[in-house]
Length: 360
Image (cartoon, rainbow, N blue to C red; front, side, top):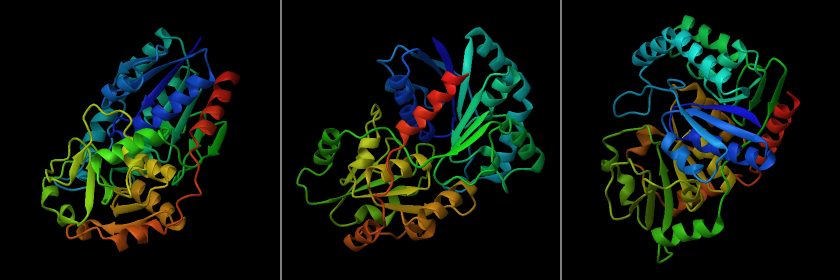
């Protein structure tokens, strides 16, 4: 039985949810595979997602830094981010030795990373094949935010990946020593019965617009409850469990909910930052998108540019969000975007990964 180490970025839940989709498909394709998930931030969520799967094991390890945001904002704090990334890199050699010991002890034969540099570096040091799967790397995401020598270090790690599978919205160098492939959007599968059940619970009368308001589980903005949006007529809102907004028309996703993609699919409109995980779930479910713009983040700019170019969303500036009220005409404007041409590519990606694993 081959052992795969799957490194998942610690920034938010998006990387964890989309990795869940790929791991589920891989396990269906290959009965002689076991997966060790290396992660920390959303480990509880991942354990719940695979609680009935004995071939998935978990290892708590901090895989990367992600973004550091300004207080009460979606924008990055460049100074604090530089300090945090600098600390991460100063400890990298120690972390790398730990990863190498782990990989040797568990007889890891293949590494997948979305998209921590740690697993890629460990695999390279042991001559184990690795595959990077993402719409970005932290090397490109941090450009313009952190110092050049820190960027250079990250570049050196990412260039060691054996294969690179880039996703929709990607604007990356041609990583991958042996191969580079491009794919579109993917997400965990939708259960139509569950989607309708959630819809009826939120809007039992069936006469309201249901809006998914997704700013991410790592965003803490204290002024959200003061936004005008909650007063939108004939609207019900779905928000994450950590969003501190209490209005009669606001429904919090239960903290123990695992299949959160059902809540995205239950909406008439998804209002979110340009996080790839939520965007992909909306696109795969055919739900219109309204995206808040964060101009200082390269990852967001690449995602937004792609979505606009392919007519997959409308855009709103953060300042506009302060006075935004959802109207039927706004929903209709977003709905007119061409959102139905993209299929869920989780199965195709898993098939290609499985071929790479079997060939090594």
